[in-house]
Image (cartoon, rainbow, N blue to C red; front, side, top):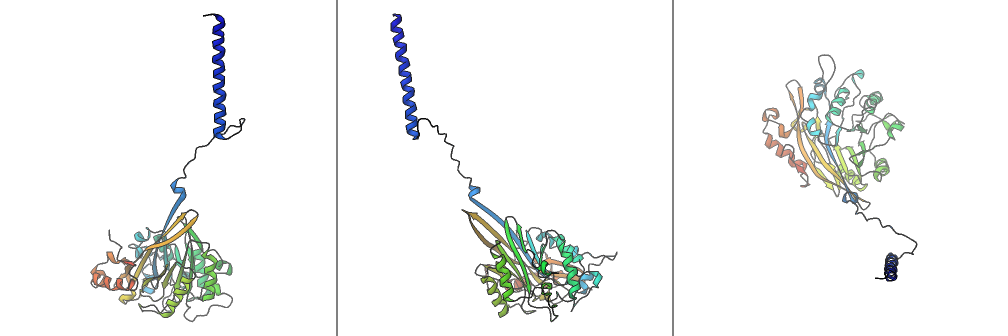
Length: 392
């Protein structure tokens, strides 16, 4: 083949190659709908992980009633060296409390401490070491508002508040040492769920609260409660209110209790925790509000059977955040029984859950008494679960 022919073939091939490249370039530009002098780099679209779309949080709460320390009850903690220790009284309860995120009780007798002189009914003052045992057992929500808060006057309240103030991880409500203390935050957070905790009492056994020092104890009135609840309602997921109310030694809530419960439910309170009757009363729903009318005594020196039986109530709080919307639900509401046991001479006090209780300790048929008192708990609301502690 002549050299000129070869040269022509190479020229033709180059022209064809160039034309193909130009066509491909313009085709890509057209497809991308971009001017010829721009280059678009498309990032891959990543699917949002499911866990970022929906988030779930859970919080468990357990509640017991009145820590009412009569003479025998507080002397039971006296050690040979003159100190006090009450851990043995809670040895059967502490493992239960440890399973919950939040644990409530009502400190019925004020912890003014030994320096003020210990005393029993009708004007109580108890060792501060009681609080040490309850904190060690896992209790972290404590009501200080009840009819015995003013028993030993302002001095005992100041000592009580000072004792509780430096207890890390424990929130108290209902009694304060100043206006500023009363105005402090009653909001906590755990497991991604926020809660507010408030406490009120119907009165102080006729002992007047010093004028201008109303902060010493939260006396319930609707105007104050409405103001304080509304101040926190929109800031938290759940509102818990402790109410010291009702009539002593009756298993039936009064008309006033029911009216106040409806009032609190209408304000958006989620859980109402009742005390003062010293015996158990039913647990019910008012729409979405859980109302525990009375948990009864947790521990006391009172002798009657009904005053030695209390409720361990528990529930679960769930929070779901999805598409920027938050939903709160409360379920698995339970009511189990416990018994205050002691030996002769008011010694060796122990709070024993019914599933561990023996006939020798109770002095009666355990199953029969259990059935009788469990019937009170869910008398008006069969959705309340009873007798679940100790059941696998």
